[in-house]
Length: 341
Image (tube, rainbow, N blue to C red; front, side):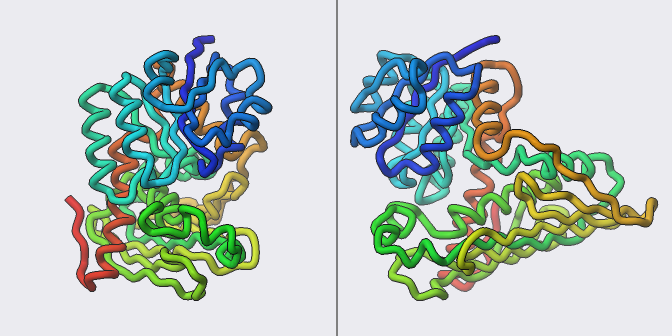
């Protein structure tokens, strides 16, 4: 088994840190982990979860990159702090897996994409739902050609409003526009924007819609967004993205096509229902039991960084999802349709 070292760049506010530490501990292709945390707030947890894999801790990123020379950097920081850390890792010759949104404006990620491509390095935004079994099966089915032209896509991803009522949450970067770049859409809705394009092979060309704080909590970002999109084949799509529930998630993706339709929840355990005009009956794909969450995606990123497989997401694909998010923000603020190159 080919193994590589990973530099973990984070701090006490790093998102999904427990999931990332668990993944790094479990993945056999990870030989060593080096932690860079200026806050020092994650050292104890990293030590406990990584054990002997944790080969060193550093208070600054440049020193870690210079001394440890990891093959891949995993960056999980608030959005405003992410671009400099990602740039430093790329300049050090590291492939990068970055927690989304990884920027507070798409132009910053575009610059990082150009840097990564110029250095022939992977820059992978953590769009982990791509590896969910039903997502992969939906993409495979679409690629068979049995469904023909995509006519329309309807989606929603809804999470809990409960978190927004916490005074502690109000102080986090998730609730701050300058630190996080946006709210529900940039944190959760972005996954569904990526899946619509990943499954169908289409690209969003035009975006319009609105965002708002409908719950009225003291946060600086949206808890609700409604998008209308036009894809490059002329078809239309919609996404409702918001914090509305007391707990859990409600999720939905439906794709109508010339030759049938597909429908599922998009999560790791979501069954996929589909219908083709030639078969003329609804069929179901049941996802197999197995790993879920971030571990499969982190493993895929590690293996790509080791040269063992293609990356689970390219820098351009991550950039496109971000461009759609920030296009919606502009559309809502200006009242004008936003067209993407």
